[in-house]
Image 1 (cartoon, protein in one colour):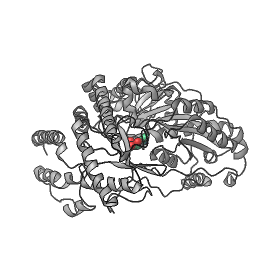
Image 2 (cartoon, helix red, strand yellow; image 1 turned 90 degrees about the vertical axis):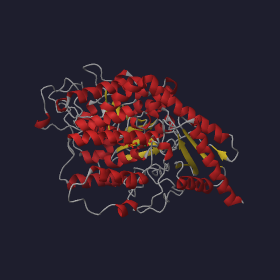
Image 3 (cartoon, protein in one colour; image 1 turned 120 degrees about the vertical axis):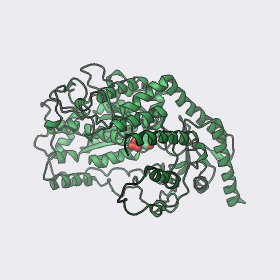
Image 4 (cartoon, helix red, strand yellow; image 1 turned 45 degrees about the vertical axis):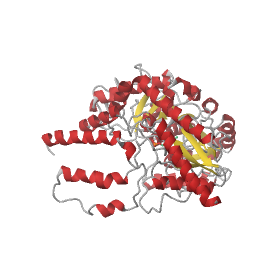
Length: 590
Ligand code: PLP
């Protein structure tokens, strides 16, 4: 494709995109294809000779579109929103065309500086405390755009792990890091997203799940109880993940209580507000942020509800030196003259921009006794509680039953993201042995950064990074605060409307209170009725939703996702639900 063909075809593409989004209501939201359908339509080998653009593009409408879930549809109620918008699309178009990689300031000065500016704007919009912003030369805090909330969680856990290991190493200089690692423990609620469990698996640390209260909220007393018990066994609590807006029911952990406990025991507090974070641009929802000043890191996805298309996870840290210590490498080809004067998201500057804060002291009295003997026989370390079954249908297929084992249709196609892990992390020695094996297999002991060495700045796992700040900046400017707030409030209003419709019908119930834009509902009676309802709704393809399960109660999650959803769409979806419910109740009860 040359310049002149690109000019013509790209303009046609823009028209195609605008037509698609304008008329999306007409498409079936959930596809009716069977696994393997595309394999039957496309050749097994790549073409030897160049193909004409028109021939290629023709296949999009005939072959690709029928196999997509239309996430921008007003009838999309599954998962959480994954919205896009015209300014965001244009940001990504330009970013794709420029394809600049914004890792160091020198790799693209405007790229990294715009990221810092947009993240400061966004942080202020949410009402985050100043310590998370990066406005002064010596601010230790700041924001960074990560790819996903999962990655932000992992980055936070790894930074906290490094901080804890450094502290423990100082106090136990003759003990190997791998041994110390085996004594670290972190916490999240039993409602936390599966990505928190995954971060623990990757970080090779024990994870304890705190039982949530009747409102699915993690409370300080339960967390403290667990921490005290673990410390008595010689474990070292080092990281806690609080969720604001759980995946199953948009429940909120009690941030102030949890934060106070973290502060008392020197644990890093990470806040995962993947979905709900967008709502904090509206002051009326900020009660859930109470205590955020106690957090060490905070992340949410503008790529969910804020109409900045995937990927874009906003992450702030209070003290970025903990990240830099974790991801510190310093090859010569990444050094540049202006190091230290602006943020390098993967910097190799000679002198850090930020002052290092002293590490929090971890009480190592107990661990000292434990690690100084053979910890492979750590018989007095109690087994952790069972990991939760993440039954919110997000990374499982949508008609997961309350047994957690069935799928959307009979699919044998690949699930590229499946939260069903067969790994048993419950065995206490497993993490430690796993780590030791990896460590020895590589012939290396983990290298901890020398705290006296000059700070080098690192904010993330990959080196290369897209110019994501562009689309965020476009969206913030083109909607303005007022436009974004209007969008959030409208989603909540529509969810309230749906909630009222459900509550007015005696056949249904809402077992968990609605928060923000999501309603969880079910047919009264056996789980099987609601399971059948959801399966049939999805098979009909008019609207799309996924399930959740709370303590054995199966529900349908109905999230208002699209900015195109209207009052009439909500009424139409409710009519669809009533029609299908009537059929099912007739089938079962006659
Ligand atoms: N945390 C919560 C609370 C979520 O609901 C989700 C996904 O919906 C995630 C984390 C994972 O988000 P991501 O796909 O950005 O990793």
